[in-house]
Image 1 (cartoon, helix red, strand yellow):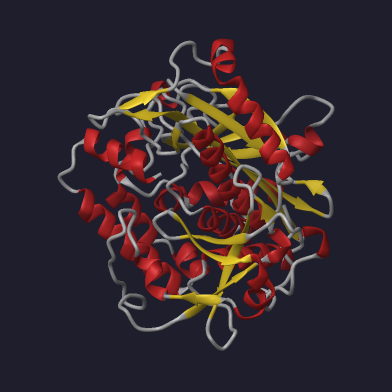
Image 2 (spheres, rainbow, N blue to C red; image 1 turned 180 degrees about the vertical axis):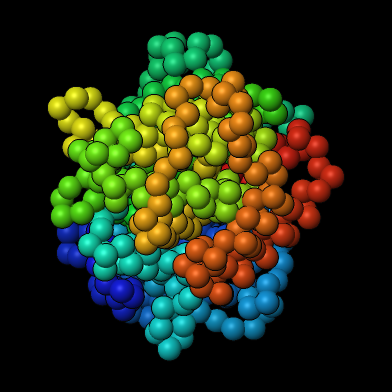
Length: 453
């Protein structure tokens, strides 16, 4: 979608919209951000006010950083309460018309203090800052999220009824959804999103779209835009969608797998080296850093009770803390791609993440973990070539939100990278969400996640 500036700190507020983005067809612009509970929240302005808003932003309470998914509010040591104000400033380099919502456009927002200083609790600024930190070491990152969702309706009794059932990955699903999928492909193309694949997935009502990799901030922007476009297109066809990690307890859920590869001077560090499966030494160290921090990263990328209903063995959710070549049961999957194109396509995939996560926190935290692995010159443990559950001795990822939160709170790497304000807000939200879900049954957890995400 766009390339983040290669700077140690974010640039000042963006200027006016580029001329090619201006159109009389746009009446209003949604300014979007994602909170620490993974909910996309917005403010909107008339298009005529966009230049002024791009300079001065719109008012924004810091308390949004401690909203929970159900709109209740907690407090941390640094954030909470009714006092204070920030400015939400749209990044107009990322402005896109919303093809499925005529007359509307969308732009992601960055948050600033009223003195014009980047706000230390801004998740998008964090992702940009980690991207810049990698750039100072001569590294660039290519990232992209897979988007899985379930389409259906909720009946009068609150039961979710998928739009289709058998067969998994079947052509029957494409026939059933052909008009809606075609409209989605057209809408994403009109929004300058490069779609690589659209296909039916395993669970009833489940579909997936994969998009081209970008810089880390752009990848997070794109996955937010893709999800809301899916939602809008489905609504035009009388359907609801959910990106919840668990739709029905005991069944395969929705992931938001992150694909990533570190590069140096145009060379893909996941290919052409003498390390395991062709990794370069630096690429191996980056992946080893991610694997080391994976228990803590789980509190960022799969943060809630519904996430842990999905993270079970034998469902390709990546429930084991291990890596392997093309191993879909490993949390960290190495993908080489076809012979002849591996220098371009080799990448790693984190399979354990889902769409209840804030994608900016995900991309920034993965970069921080990988850079720490390079700094410590880490090596990967032996890979797991088959089913980790049958191998014996392969550790599971943390088995509950509380265990993942404890790992995050113990992570010096992520605490330093996130900074005290953002770290405090995230952990406060996680603690409050754990308390809120205590005593809920799996069925209640899944039903709530369906409605919220």
